[in-house]
Length: 270
Length: 270
Image (cartoon, rainbow over all chains, first blue to last red; front, top):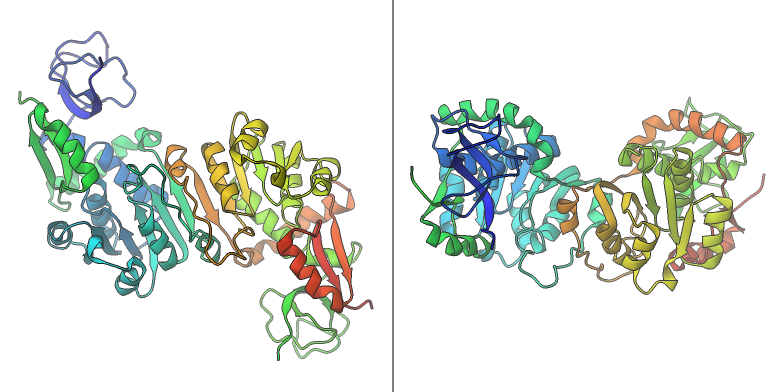
């Protein structure tokens, strides 16, 4: 039996690889276990900066952070003053995309699934506005209310009905960065998206991406993010579950929308 | 009552605009009528080269030709040796895209709706292969047969079930140029596309475009196309209906797949 794997932070106890030595801290794909042997080095990074919480390397300084950075800056080609919509906006990726967009001078609205998350988006992350999609009977009407002039950039985390409604509300030459389709993962049959005609009428570019294609820009990403974090220009919220035994419930929570912010499972303190 | 409009070729009988004078030939948006007054000059081009059939300016040298050029070269970023699939491939745009792809050294397969069209693709336009989608009960299986290694570039003219099947067969980093969704135009409710997850897994870029955004490259396009036509490097098939009275049936034929090649209605000879 193999343990589950995920993005984690670990300390090197022993190593036969020249790039990693005893005592090094790393982030990358690790097992859901207290001790483990890592043989796959692709996507394994040494942690050089420890003046920020180590858990940040599972999120804002790890894969989700790099996803937000790549998905927004590289995929969406954002410009100052543009209208940005983010679904699942309180998640580890969404919360960062919204803050990147604000730092760039965009108008940013996010959707989330609870009042608590909507409050977080507006009060903590500085979104211009936010709404609870579960309280909206007509997503198209909701988007028209928040974006009377339309959406330039959609950062897609959920898919399905939300994507269909967003397509109707995109502006000409809009860009859609497809990071996740979390509303579809648990369905036997995905929901059909019907409004793809809008891709032509509005000359929309839609692109899926995988963060692993962009590991080469990780140093550049750190150069941007570390000062933002140290200067408090970017906020970050984690939802920390204590102990390996809390892992399964935390994982299930991701698919039912129970977690707020980045879900972290703390397996062992030093 | 206003006449229908479409892309046509006409001779200037009188003009108060300095760029157009009596006797000039033009192509652009014209009425379905023998004589008309044109007041909208955007997208109206003077015909400078008359050593090719004038009808070509409704097709290979007009909007469909420019659509093929833009949709393939500008939107798809093609590379030599890539695998290209084109739906509605015998149409005015598809037949050109296939030939562009062959000239670039790609492997090209097209789909069409009759044996006659499939033969045309293979014999006249030089496609590597072609199939009649109406004879395939399983489009996914058909595409796997023609593209065992997957598709790099999909030139989308039809949408719906074909797009869903293509998404399953795209290669990583594939590109989809969305030119038309002709299978959807006559439906009360568009078919839902279910396989958009592939956009993420395969890091696909999908982009709709409108040829009117690219009118500025028309001179460059002519520089490429005229030699191709004169040297016989590009073949072109028209389906010419004689007389304005044949127009409605010809238009209806576009939606039922009866025409082969570019549908032209010849309203008046000089």
